[in-house]
Image 1 (cartoon, protein in one colour):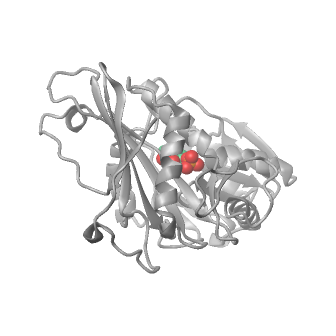
Image 2 (cartoon, protein in one colour):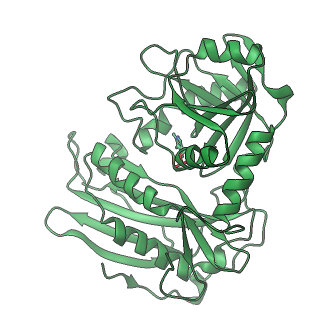
Image 3 (cartoon, rainbow, N blue to C red):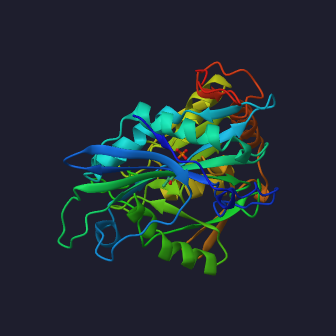
Length: 363
Ligand SMILES: Cc1ncc(COP(=O)(O)O)c(C=O)c1O
């Protein structure tokens, strides 16, 4: 893919803000875009100024929600170079999401190269640890016609922006509301795809949970409303007796997280027993009450690891580890972020190192 690099005017070159960014509200000066049509395939690949997108009111994505996205991060290494963490997984998942939503595939290597080029141009926007540059690839349906159909035209774009901590609470336990009525996804539906509708479906309960004093929602399966699936926009892990890590097996309605996958490998290598299983919410809550579950945490790119301090379920509260961040959460957080930031050698080949000022990444 040839990418047209459009030079920016001096007014388009905003300075990099000094620290203090929260999550996802500041974006860099440039973005990548390309368009798709059935006749031409992907074309008009360009990196130019970050800009608004004009869409006709009839544009398909605004009506029928054919929209997918990804989320990954670029980390500043101590030597100044930049690391991406398992970006190949995100490129693959983007295409899996596209497939489920009847959207066109993107060449994974081209997609990654476009991101690398964008980061190279925006390298000044990659903050030092513990911040990172969040990378958000998106694809939307752009046919201008009503009538439910898979669009024949699409826009694919990538925006990037510096981020700090995902949660106001930082690396402190969060209160989680267990939704026993609304569900996020069903097997056979779109839960395993990173598509906008899943997040839209979560808003109402998210708001109700906040009104009740909880900051996230634990989702149960859509059929029985009994088996644990995810927490907010994260996967979830339960720690038994400080040594066994159990996470819900991918059921078809769970998003297969890159962080989850990394914790399964890393956890085993660090000596924990890691299991993927079907987790019954009643048994899980009984195990918390009995003190067998010593820690619970959500895991995802944005927060990395988010300890859960308590669950609220049907009017009752279940406190975990005295509402303290536990040692396994801390251990995994440190090991994972050390790898991501290049604080330790990467024995897994998970990191893609982009030397500052160099055109070619070192794999
Ligand atoms: C619904 C949902 N589950 C889980 C995750 C965690 O996935 P990852 O670790 O790839 O960020 C995310 C975030 O991408 C998500 O949106």
